[in-house]
Amino acid sequence: MRVVAGQYRGRTLVAPRGGSTRPTSDRVREALFSIIGSVEGVDVLDLFAGSGALGIEALSRGAASVTFVDSSRAAVTAIRANMAMVDDARPIRVMPTDWQAALRAERTAGRTYGLCLLDPPYSVLPRIAGRIGAALAPVLSDGATLVVEHQAASGPVEIEDLLVTARTDRTYGGTGITVMRIGASG
Image 1 (tube, helix red, strand yellow):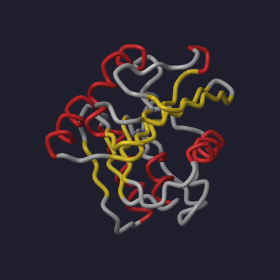
Image 2 (cartoon, rainbow, N blue to C red):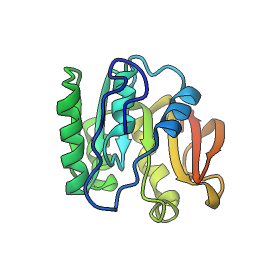
Image 3 (cartoon, helix red, strand yellow):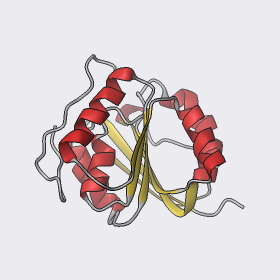
Image 4 (cartoon, rainbow, N blue to C red):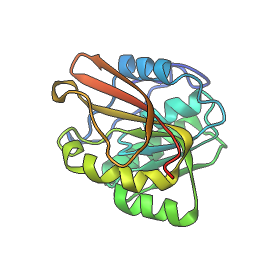
């Protein structure tokens, strides 16, 4: 697994030990960032970060900051190892906690993000899709982009409680990508 483009192009990334993490393939990351467009100067939230490959790809392409969230010790270890390899001075935080606690903390701190990368285990997404939108809404800036990686066979994903103003769905083999532009919720 390598960084696809930008400042860190070609750098090799490590994946967490064990089989619980499904790293996003280089091909899918390249397609995903092609759909998103420029992330220059954007604050990024990488939920269910796994190896951190998506957030690191955003940093490589000019993101202002990245906050990585994952509750797995193996994932947090991999993220920290990958960040040590890129040695970046921009604001980078690793939150070793679950998505609910992380979003509560970010809301309380008043932090907002212009890009949220949501790549939960495929079995988890159906259980959280009805709840995560309400928790995400306060931490997404107006016009933010939400990217959801999911199992292609499950069809397009729906995240409730977010005002979606534009949407793109793509399939790459067994992987589905849904990119949503989020408007003001109130």
